Every structure is written in structure tokens, then in C-alpha cells.
Length: 444
Length: 44
Image (cartoon, rainbow over the protein chains, first blue to last red):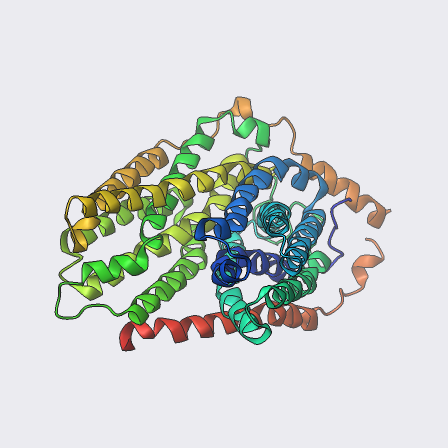
């Protein structure tokens, strides 16, 4: 499939909704927990077993983004969005079959393996195209799309819960819910497939820099540069720090204020988790757009430096003031979201637009690593502290100190980022050659 | 100058509005549900 080239006069403001239709859909993955209790009771599963489809899905997201990135660059965004649509929707359809026939392995295979490929390819599908359409505001453009991934869970969580309430939580009700999800997401994602276009020229906006301006590095070349690995550390540390809060947000706020005159109720803790999701989403669009104004290196200085200060405030004074605790946690989560959303623009600054989607895919292995590292640190330390007879805020003190250390490591890695050495650059600006070829039929 | 350049490109404002509504409506629903839940922090 050749990349779909925009006709004359095509508006670049049609590209973000195309990207959002994919990201809002695949973001459903973070609402998988809605299906866990009904699956456990309907199919007699343990909590660990019911988490398998989600865990396999996230593993497949990382693998398909890392290994499928070059294919996405070669075949273009419409091909990638079509693959994402087919995989993500058929994952749900296979799961529906699995629930209807009580074959749990089909749900793991469908949602986890097949759907997971859709997650990875879908996640990176619009990144390169958005950067090419918005060379003047790449942070904002990718921020919109990656905000959609956060927004997907906000939509799916209440929607799936309402559906299970209507259809019933037995295996036929779950099967029907999976079927509706598969069909609805197929229709919803179709908008992205139909609307996505690559720009006709390397300079789609008057006055903006050309997308092929500056150094261009291939994905294969990028992983051989220290810059790629510095950014890998930056992303991994930033995500680990965010997950440190996100993973145990509800029990954490309850533990912090358990021995005070104003303990936190279960519903208030749920409200706190919801507020963190809002901060995560707002950070994706807000901080990423800010990076267009103050620069990528500076915004990561803020994420990592101010993030460390926020953790220090939590560790020192978090249990003395509820507003301070909430404020610090919200800021950390906004940096977590911002870190995800700003990284494609940072990659574009360093490696150019040539294979930025594929490079982004490879960098997402940092996310997979952080997804294991963050919860492991917080849970392991909290368990050991509890065994040692500690309670309340002291369960988390050591975790926070470790998070500060990780953020400092990330800060140093960010400081080490320098422009990529010329030996890694590809020889010719290929975009210009493509433009000339595209324009020839018109001017003939 | 090519003959194409003398024609004005089609007006795509309707398509842009439709596309943003397509993604904006479910997102607004999600944000509404989120706000409802988040207020529990102050009332719960």
C-alpha cells in the first residue's frame, strides 16, 4: 500500500482527529480491569489469570511498536491504521468467541496477542505523519494524539461497565460486550483510515520549517547513537516515577492520612485516582505543547528536576497537608503524561522526520521496562516496610527516595543529549526528491 | 502556472467539524464521567 498523499488544499487539521480516532480506541487497553471481576466469576479465574490478556497486550504493544516501526514507515499511516483496526477489532471478536464458548485461551490469544499487535502498530501509526504536517508545532500535534491514548480509558471504563450492566456479567453477557466493542471500535477507527493523508510537500505550512530540514537519521542508525540511549533512560526514569504514584494511588492516599483527623474514604480515594488520570491527560497536551515554545531539553529538565522536588516534598511534608500531597501527586502525573507525549518531538529534533515513527517504536521498550520497574519498586518496598511493622506514610518514604534518585539519573541523561554526529546522518534529503516526483504530474 | 492552481481548493470546513465532533463527543463523555468521579475526592 502506498502512502495516501493529500490532495491540494487538504487541511492539516483533519490529521489530529484521524490520529485521535485510533488512539482513543486503543487506549481502551487501560480499562481492561472492568472485565476482570466478571471474567473471574463467569469462568472461574484467579486475579492473576484474568490479568493475562492485558499483560500480554502490553508486551505485544512494545514488541510490535519496536519491530513493526520500519514497516509502518515504509507502508505509510493508512496501512498502519488498517492493520491496527483489523487486529484490535478482531482481538475483541476472538474474545467474544472465547467468552461464548468458555475457552479462556481464546480471550488471551484474541485480546492479548492479536489485539496487542493492534495496540503497538496503532500507537505509532500517526506519529510520523503528525510531525510532518505540523513541523512548526510537533509537540502539540503528537500531544493531541498521545492524549487520546489516555482518553481512551476514560471513555471505555464507564462505557464497558454500563454495557456489562445491561448485558449481564455471565459469559454470554461478556461475549456480547466484547462483540459490541469489536464492531464499535472498527467503525470508530475507520475515520482515521479514511482521513489520514501524508503531506504533498516537505513544507506543508507557509513560514514553517521544511520537514526534511536538519539532520536525518535512519532507525537502524539511531539505535547506534548515544542520544537514543540517553532518551531511552530519560523516558524510562520519567515513566517509572509516574507509575510509582499511579500504581498505588488509592491505598497511598489512604495510608498517608489514616492516622489523621481527616482520614480518606474509599470513594474519596477513587476520586483521587480519577483526578490523577485528568492530570495525566492534561499533561500530555499541555506540557507537550509548551515544549514547542521552550524546547525539548528544557521541558525534560522540568519533568525530571521539578519531579524530583515534588517527590522530596511528598517524602518530607506529604503527611502534614492533604492539599500539598494532592498537588504534588498531580504535578508528578502531569509530568508522566507530558514525558510520553513530548518524546516523539524530541526524537524528531535529534533524528529528523525520515524514520521518526520507527525510532519512536524502538524507544517504547523503555515504557515496557518502566512498566515492570515502577510497580516492582513501590510494591516490594511497601511490603517489606509493612513486614517491618511500619504503617502510614512511612511505608512509602524509601520508595520516594528511590524515585528521586531515578529522576536525577534521568536528569543527567537529558543533560548528556547533544546533536547527533554527522556520521549517522543519511546522505540526501529524500523528502525533497519525493516532492519533486509528486509535483511533476501537476506542472506537466 | 498549472491549470489546477487557478481553481480554489474545496471547502473542507464541514468535514473538519464532523471529524472533530466524531472524536470530541466520546471524549467529552469520558471527561464528564471523570469529573463526576473526581468530585468524590472533595465530597466522599
